[in-house]
Amino acid sequence: MQEISWKDNLRIAWFGCFLTGASISLVVPFMPIFVEQLGVKGDQVAFYSGLAISVSAVSAAFVSPIWGILADKYGRKPMMIRAGLAMTITMGGLAFVPNIFWLLFLRFLNGVFTGFVPNATALIASQVPKDKSGYALGTLSTGVVAGTLTGPFVGGLIAEFFGIRNVFLLVGSFLFLAAILTILFIKEDFQPVTKEKALPTKELFKSVKYPFLLINLFLTSFVIQFSAQSIGPILALYVRDLGQKENLLFVSGLIVSSMGFSSMMSAGVMGKLGDKVGNHRLLVVAQVYSVFIYLLCANATSPFQLGFYRFLFGLGTGALIPGVNALLSKITPKAGISRVFAFNQVFFYLGGVIGPLAGSAVAGQFGNHSVFYATALCVALSCTFNLIQFRTLLKVKEI
Image 1 (cartoon, rainbow, N blue to C red):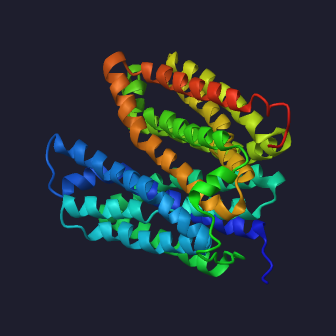
Image 2: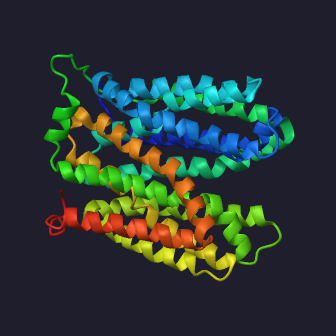
C-alpha cells in the first residue's frame, strides 16, 4: 500500500485549483467582446454574454450529483483527471468556434464536465485529520481565489497582444497542465466499491451525523454565493454613484481584487482558528460580521471607503465556504463524501446563477445601494437558521 501525504496532495491540489480558477476568470471578462466578434449585434450582446456565462453553471448544477456518485465509486483522482482533460477540450475549443451557437454548446459541455475543484476538495477532506480539516480546506480555497485574481490580468495581456482566441488556447493549456499534475503527483489509496457494497445516496443522507444540519449547510453555501454574486452586476454602477468618473473600470476592478486578496490572506488563518475554536462557531461569527460589513457598504460615501469595506469583508470570507466544507467533512462518512460535496456544489452553482439576476432586479427597483441591504438580510436569515441548528452544539468545540 502506497504511503500518502495529505500535505503533498494539498500542495498539488492547490496548484491545480489555482490553474482552474485562473482558467475561469481568464474567459469571463472578455465574453461580451468575443460575442460581438462572433457576429452578435446591439442589445443581443448582453443577453448572449450572460447566457454564455450562466449556461455552464446551470449544466454543472444538474450533473454534479452524478459525478459525485461516480467519485465515491471509483475515486476522486479519476474525476479530477476527467474534469481536467475534458475541460481542456471544451475550453480550448472555444478558440475555434465559428458562431454564437457553437460557443453556447461548448460552454454547456464545459459545465457538464466540470468538477476539478469539488473533487479536489473531497479528496483532501477524505485524507486530512479531522482536527486539521479547517486549515487544509481553507488553504485549498485560496488556490481558486489566487487563480481568479491572476486570470484577468494575464488574460488581458494575452488578448491585447495576441487576440482573444489565443486566451482560450491558454486556458486549455492550463487545464491540461492541471490534469497532468494530478496524474503524476496526486496519490489516492482508494478501493473501488462494488455495486453490492455501495451505500445508496438515500442511505448516505440517513447515515450523516446531523441530517438537518447537512441541508442547512447546503442552503448556507447557496446564500454565500448568492450574496457574493448579487453585487457583481451593480458594483461598477455603484462606484460611479459614489462619484468615480474617471478610470471607472480600473477602480471597480481594484475594489473587487481587494476583497479577493484579503480573502486569500485570511483563509488559512481562519481555517486554523476554526479548528481551534470550532468551525460551526466561527461560521456564525463570520456571518454576523458579513451582515455588518454589507450594511457599511450600503452606506459608503466614497469609492475608497467602499474598497476598504470590501477588503474588510474579504477577511471574513475566509471562514465562510472553507468553514462549510470543514463541517461537511466532519459530519459525513468518508464513503460518501464526494456525493455530499457534489450536492453542496449544486447549491453553490445555483446561488451563482440566481444571485446576479436578483441583484439586478433589486437595483432596478430600489437603487444600487439597496442590493447591499438585501444581501445583508439574506445572510442574516441564513445566520438565524444556523443558530437554530447549532443551538445545542455551540457549547462544544467539535461536532
